[in-house]
Image (cartoon, rainbow, N blue to C red; front, side):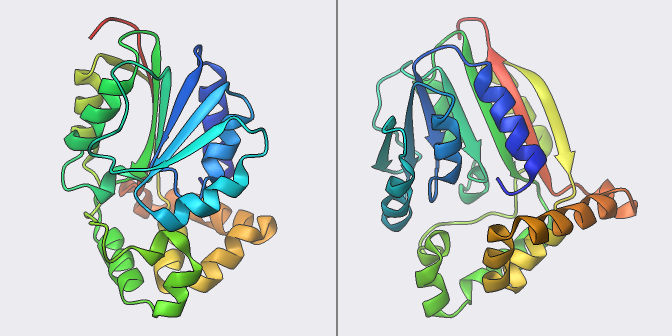
Amino acid sequence: LYDLDDYKSLLRFIKTITGRYVLDFACGDGRNTSTISKVSGSVIGVDVSHQSIRIAASHNEKGNINFIVCDGSKLPFQEAVFSAAIVVDALHHFKSISTPLKEISRVLNKENAGLYVKDLLYSPIVSISESLIRFAPKFIKQKIPEFSECDMIPHTNGVMKYDLLSFISSMNFVIIRNESSSFLLPYLVRGLFIGPFRFLEKSDKLASILYKADKQLGQTFIGRFPRSITISSNRNKAH
């Protein structure tokens, strides 16, 4: 999560969770996992990238996180073991969102479970940015873990909003928050200037300026074409 509003929404969601175990699906370098761990009992972060998991392991300040390298289409857990799952910018890496969502649904409690999803919506901008990342020099990919294995990890052109909402509802989740945002500038910067984007991430002031500009852009006609979606949902009945 790069936007302060998204960060706050994640914290609000985590604070509503009752239960011991939380799954951070496709946790990447562990930044979100670390945030979750501060207000949760036990967190398990899973990712297909060995390099990302090695970096994520350094974010285990409270000692309540376990990181596992695994394929998100086949999670190494029994059914109904997690009270909540966090899925940030992961679903567009799958050819079909039903594959990871079915697995996530399987390992979540059949009732009183929470699901938080943030992902990219369908747009040519995503395709352009991902293509640029693929052609980035090797030395840049080696320095940025989530890009180091990007040639091995499939990408799609974002997720379809209706499909995502429908599938989440079909798993007996009640959607309590559904918000779309433009997210144009950060994603273009990410694809066109990989190094500078990493610098912006580390500079709160510059990142804040970028996102404020993006939100202003979202107020124009471009806002009719939202770039990302954030969904908070609860499963209250047996599936």
